[in-house]
Image (cartoon, rainbow, N blue to C red):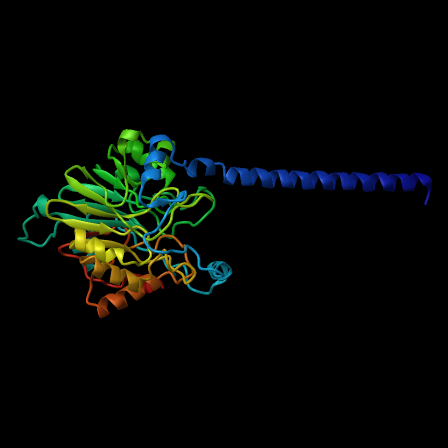
Length: 409
């Protein structure tokens, strides 16, 4: 090989190496840009820790010890040694964690169609029973539940409307581009919600407190947000004015639009980033002149339910968490059998299960929570309503449990 050929080969090799380096650098830059784009909304979604007067209230709370809120009983968010098992089951478990077909979604304000099932035609689309000769219920007695999916629900109580744990985003995540995604669409857009009298938040986890939904409700509604102690800092960070934020510690109460709201205990935890338990979590009691509703939020089973039932019950209806359980975190989410026990301790009338079907958050089968709940409710003679997302439940005339999910297992 001549000296000139050798020189040309060396130059070509150098140029090839140079191009490869530039290509790798461009790919790395593109990957970094994509990652930055995916998490660009995260800093806002993280919210803010309490400060000023809010922080002072937090520090004075009987539930706040040594820099964090504590549960009423000893609680572990993850059992020792179970983290690896939980991750393996979450990502590689063989449970059918998605429905096999399309989850039926109901518009609660639409007229029934000719092909609607009997339970839907008579119960799902109107708060008034449409049977001939049936008088319209007195608004003073009205009590309906519209379940929108997961923990989001509307309480129609004595002519007032209370929205619970509203999450309308496509993902329950600090990022709108990554994280658990909806298994069904929301039944109605936020803009079509009726005028609300109050918005209840149980705690600050992403599947219960959603920045995009809060911002939208701030602009489209005038109702106050009732939240556990410390959660108000997140709302202020997102533009909600202080006068629309009502923060309550456990057993504290507020009266809004003629309804009585009491923040009651739960066995859970809080945190939107690495700092844990800087804001409180809880359940809610909503009481009108004659009607009583209990909303569990997220909680492990504990004897506090019996105390709540004795103090504030009996309840016409309870909305109780039944999904997202695991052997790795038994203290902070109830299994369905415990949800039935909690309902009985609360002295509940009708049980409406929530916190299932919408997001894939735990290593159990998609329909396991509701299947287990139905079996236990039958054994213990508990009245149950299992609405489709968007279906309105008239508490005094609930639709029969028709097993609509069974074809989707």
